[in-house]
Length: 350
Ligand code: GLV
Ligand code: MG
Image (cartoon, rainbow, N blue to C red; front, side, top):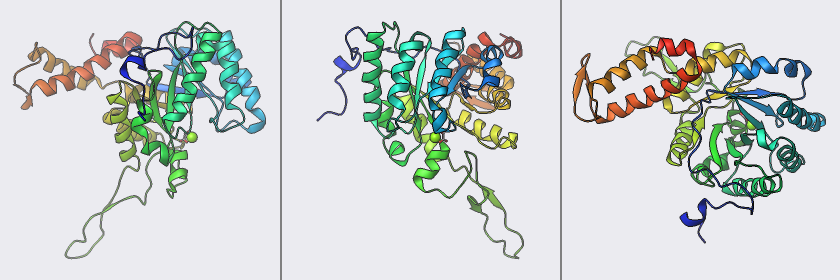
């Protein structure tokens, strides 16, 4: 049995009256997905400034929200969506897992009351394309019922061993797919990894340098526990025209380690990360906006090869058609950042 719809049917709406699925993701800057508990009054009071300061605001209904607060969080999210204008800031919700008692009402109630404002549903603990197909169909039915004019997208969290095994099929499951985030905490538990940390490295996971002939201390270099998964996720996402993200970094006392984890993800192709603490917003902005020096060099490459072909030397470094494409990735991102951030626009000299 074929695992996916034929090309002719892939972009057909899944319910009569549902909007046409998108053929391409909207171009949006999503350097951080900022998590808030939507029922918390202190957080709610600060929402206007928070909305203005982030690329994506996400109401979290899943883990970290206690079982007896799930319904208050869902109501809080609906109120928050109804009471605020979001402008260029994305509005997302992380619903509860599909096997939980809350998931169905999360989707049904939120689309009914906040559907027109909702950009993306983040779906946790995705195991395979079947989870995406279920939510895809349900969203289409609800979009049709509530006459929602544009499709609500799905963002999967990659956080189980089975999900990682099926990452390609998840990324390709539907034109409703927006992207994927690495969920290092659940993934560590699911795989039986021996770490209690939320993201980042572990001092014991590394490579020991060879013993020197005369003895003496041997260097031990920490390695990135998430390299393999991030690499698989980036390839699966990019191949399907969707966006890869690093997820949470849980040690709020170690800003340098957070920045380093975010930067590894950025360099490997991720477009953003989660911010769980307000101070991680600035970290994500800094890391997921290209460095002005790198942008200036990339612009020199583009200027030196106006049609993108040939070979030139710049500062002793060989440039050709491939480095032209690398430079274009950086300059395109810088332009997107510059549209939103006048400070960086000036630093990029646009
Ligand atoms: C995020 O949900 C994680 O489990 O790391
Ligand atoms: Mg999780």
